[in-house]
Image (tube, rainbow, N blue to C red; front, side):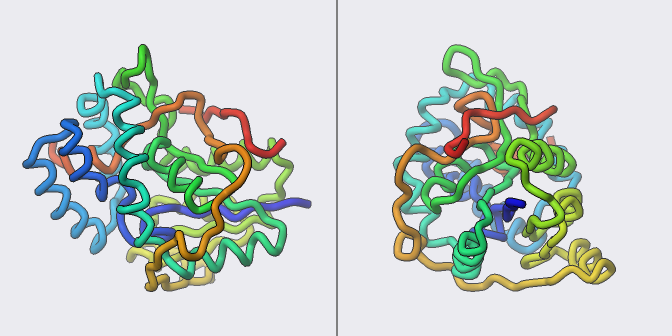
Length: 269
């Protein structure tokens, strides 16, 4: 039976937060102020050291509604498109790219599963040539974010999303692999037959030890453009109904104090 390999994105496939790195471009585009850019540098440092725990993620979700309401979807897409290769290309772990190839040779599809927004995760997945992405999506009306969350790709939300995708694709989850650095992804890791902890936080490392899960260290960021062939055909498939999505980690850097997955048309039948 066919199977897949599910990869968390931040600190698993790339060496930083996929959203926090866009702080300066968002500032230049007028979406955030200068103070937020300075906070983003500190937030990135904290994130690299500690990760984002459940409390932080809950605060991100709540703050998101006020942060993104009224933002132009097209403007966000344009900023990401203009800066994606400059910001993300040098951050991709060589070890992750090697695993992509290993799973492809074994006939498995590659799926990135991230709580960052579709408009960031999608282009990254496209750049890396993966088969599909699952990401957070926001509700959009008249080309702007309403502030409502359509699907939050976090915790049990990730687990439900991969279960639904596996059912549609006829994948046997017992034959699937999953990779993550965070304890918050324990539901996703537990849902597959081959969970792997990558650069795990303390809680995930403990869980992996208790369950005899493999633990791997990724430490060699490379320029992905030198290692990944340019994808051909149509765009990467997105697990969401709208073209836009939430900027959750940006919400974290701006305001730490302050749901059922959908599906879009797939590249593969």
